Image (cartoon, rainbow, N blue to C red; front, side, top):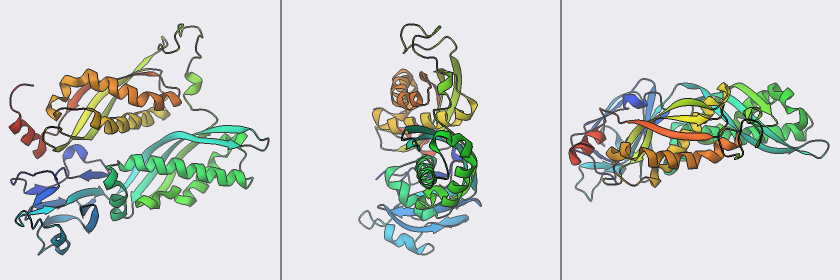
Length: 354
């Protein structure tokens, strides 16, 4: 468990994470009597030792068992009864639009017996339906909800397409023509998102193809302009900037958890506009996954930009390559939330220039 400064008397979502579906409070020890501020478009789910205790609606709540009875199970009696051993999650209750989904649906067999690879690019609108189910599904793995949406959506679309092909309503070889039919069937199935406590409001756009959309723009190895080494970037390389906000990172020296905003660029194969959000999501997922590979203090991250860039490129390259995107991912800047008490505590423990 993480220790929390006793001065932390008010808990609320930081401004840097205002648009994030789920924000986890960085401390697992909360002083009894702390005030939890839940905005009008939020709800709060509180867990202890991996078990959901209860949910609180909008308003300011004083975290004492007398006012919130389910907190009785979280009181740290061994430590003197002055703290709650709990995790607090703040979830947005509105509709999220423009959730980008892109990926392979695998290979489907057509009526001639040939296996046809299918690629999907889609945009979804989702809404929180069961906050306790969502927290229960994601909290133990520290998984980002949007990553979970993408995983379930791809799996659900594949199941939907297999069903339609099996019934003869869609032909794998000409699947691009039947995107509207697949879209309607996918919406009817809700793509399995109810498993993680979300409603599928709708599939905003959906395109199906027999290859990744960017593959047509990738020069073949040895073609004019690519050079003898297929690993070299073609002369038509483009640079795309990206920003990934509030990537969770646990400081190795103190165990404190803080959200780091990363700035960077991707230099390589030009990225088609419809794939840009998917590329940013892939980089964000890689940043979250590689947190355990960085050994050091959060405040020292800027001095390790080259190391982090190399790790990030290594992690994300196979996924981008599957979409026909080759390039070098670079980390160019960092931001720490200035009002976060964790950051203040880190600077207090490690003063001086960095």
